[in-house]
Every structure is written in structure tokens, then in C-alpha cells.
Length: 306
Image (cartoon, rainbow, N blue to C red; front, side, top):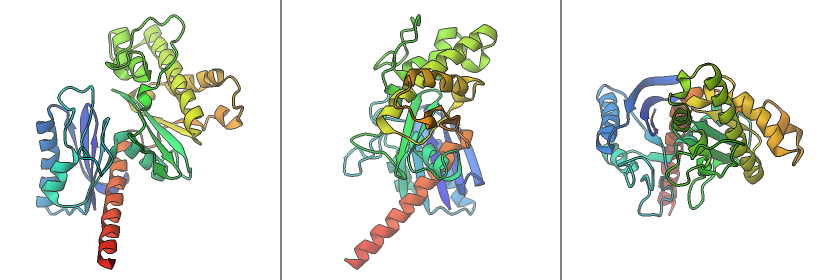
């Protein structure tokens, strides 16, 4: 039995279960300070254990940037995030100390990508990308069945994108201004129109769909050329605005300009909505927990053999 924490920028979603169809308990926690938010998440699992549930491992998929290299002193922490008060926050440590069980850790988008690969829109694929359009923009790449890591995890929300003709919006990213996140995140759309995207109607809604579709396609174009995924799965609140993904598909055909000329890029199955929708991230954290338990078992066997 696994615990999972989808640690997003606006909410934490805590779950206990083994997969999207086997969630025994769940709780949504609004993000405030690190102390209060992590305290509430730890409390959820403590109460669950005290009521008779057992946990073999916990998985955490966090907003970033995060340190994923286990040989680094800052492993398990959020690093340089624009979210006030959260830079340097230790995410893994409190859970490991509180429960003494393996803790898996990755980005929230990598967790969602793993879930879509096992249960969702990327089942059966070897290499694919999960993009989220929401409070922020992020992406997780699964290459040969494993999330892509290097010095850092991919930061697809900060890809440079060309400006749509006539677009004078400066962009909201505090680091880059008009990167993909700065131009097409939920807050960026809200800043453009003075209202949250889901509240837009009429001409404003139509304009927002076209803008989001253009910039999503621009980001996808770079991902196509850099990573050559078999499919790109799009999740997050803004992706569910009717017409956004369809607009991005139409834009992508024009922005690729026939290169490299693969018919798959014109197929509707290349750029698709997430199957698991809002459950992708929480379900993916259960996979991170499962992997952490397997790794701990393998390590124990190796130590015993030596």
C-alpha cells in the first residue's frame, strides 16, 4: 500500500492506494507556507496510519525546480522557485523522518507522465512527453520508459517561444518574461484579460483559446525537434478549456512547415489530452512510491549479498 503527494504550486493532493482505480483516501490541501502545508500533509498520513492503514512507501511529485541527484546535499529540496517562501524547502526529509519508509521523489510532471504511460494516454509507448498547462507550465519526458534526468530535470515551461504577431504582452515569468510559461500559463491568460481563463466568454474566450493554442504549439515544436517523442500528452486546467488542444494541433502543422515531414505529426493522436486528467499527478506519485520500495529492496539484497 502506497502513499502519494502531488505537491503542486497551489495545492497538495495526498492519496493512499495503489492506482487511479484504487484510491482509499485522499485530501486536498491549499498551499500556504511550507511549514503549514507540509504539516497538513504529514497529518493526513499520520491519521491514516493511526486508523489502521499501512504504508510501505511514499511517493512525492513536486513543483520545481527540485534537486533529484541523490549524491547532492540538497537532494529532496525545492531549489530556485518563483513561489515565495519555498526556495530551499526540504520536501523528502520530513516524510522520511516521520514514517521511516522509502520515499520516492520526482517532479509533479514526471509523476503525471509515468501515470499516463501506465494507465492513460501514453500506454504502450516507449518515449513520450507530458505537458501541463495550469498555474505554471511544465513538462516531463519519458525516454525508453524512464523519466529524463540530467543535471536538472527538463524545464519545458521555460522554453523560448516566438511571439504571436501583434502580441504586446510582456509575459509573466519573473526570470524570462516571455517564455512559454510567461505567455501561456493560466495566470498569464488571466493577466491578459483581467479574469481567470475559465471565466472568459465570447470574443475574449475565443482570443484566449487562439493565444494558448499558438504558444502551446510553439513549445511543442521545440520539443518535437529536441526529443522526438512518439506522443505529447497535455494536462492541467488550461488544457481542458474547449478548443485549446485542437487549436494547438492546427498551429503545430503550420509551425513545423513540413519538416521533418512525418505523417505522425499530423495525426490527432500525436497531441492529445491527458486521459487521467487531474488524477494523473496523484496516481503517478504512487508509481514513485512503488519504485522507491523496489529500489530499497534491491539495495537491501545487494548489501546482504556483499
